[in-house]
Image (cartoon, rainbow, N blue to C red; front, top):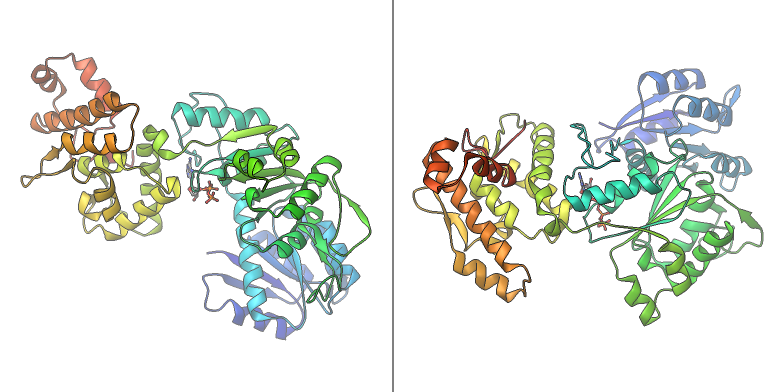
Length: 482
Ligand SMILES: Nc1ncnc2c1ncn2[C@@H]1O[C@H](COP(=O)(O)OP(=O)(O)OP(=O)(O)O)[C@@H](O)[C@H]1O
């Protein structure tokens, strides 16, 4: 459970924070003194700190420095007595996460704490990345063994420590944010902050002020100066997600920043120098957007210098079993279902054949849904959501009345012809082989020599197919947690 530490001698503040977060899954620890605050940072390992800037006998800024010595990645939100305080601005420039002015607004506080927790998560989730092809690490959180993913890992290894802008491209849910985190965690800036801004989530003017900040009075509602992410992130890394969704105005400002590392706050004259490494991501076709005039060509070339392309999951199906195992283990732990043993061959068949339009995010969600739905220790087709049955192989591969796998090759071929396949021979052979090996091994109770005899091929070939299709031969379970 995430923990928020509040260091403030004003009881109304600590009470209010406790009330604001009472109905959430966030636990709140409070203290009135800087001394105890610091010792709680060490012992309670909070994920976010709310810190009064004027503590009795000491300055919040000093405490902030000491917190940074303990944990540089811990987001600290200052609580200030009034809006527009110069000290607060100074705190932001030193690297505080944000600041809020008293009296505190409950909704604003909740939003801010959640954002800070998200940042904390991005900063601290370890990404153990195999930088060279073939390196095995059971603790990998960034899962993938396909040739395509190994290329991605290698690219990350090659460019992480270069201080260059990187553009990550790929469909939604394919893992672009994970690549960004891996780049950050393997860069020389890993001790400095990383911040993320989703350009599609904010309207133009808000995005501009989120990135570059604004001066007090620069637009209606700008009742105090705001320090933008490019300034807060000085020395660190900024992850700009959905970069194809920036307005032409913001595109122009980002381009200048990339060229000169300089910018002005909205409504301000002062030119601010910053030193930020930019990692950008998009699932849009930027070339087409440049062609259509909606994305600046000069910015495109600037961003496109180093590009990491993340393939869609359907183009690296061999990663599916690996990802299933990874998320199944996580889901059975998180959802307190230790009894889950694995996925049955039939269910696995369906999952491998599915096209995963939502990529890894969808896979993760389908695994969780199935674990929740499972009434026994094995994930069988009935626990899988309908799209996995119907949209893909529902009619071609299924369960016969006797519980054996059955195949409808005609339906498969028709469907693939309808979707203009250019690799139908290999696809059809694979579907047929999967069915054949699963069925024959069931018949022989997992005995490979006997299966080789029936099939008229060598035991080596049987073993090879078992590995290629991830068939578990001891039990009915295709994937287990080992
Ligand atoms: N190779 C992988 N190994 C383990 N988890 C992964 C992998 N790829 C993606 N994920 C997980 O899938 C989810 C979606 O990934 P992520 O947010 O990085 O996708 P994205 O491409 O940035 O999506 P969007 O374009 O929608 O922002 C996350 O929970 C992420 O941790």
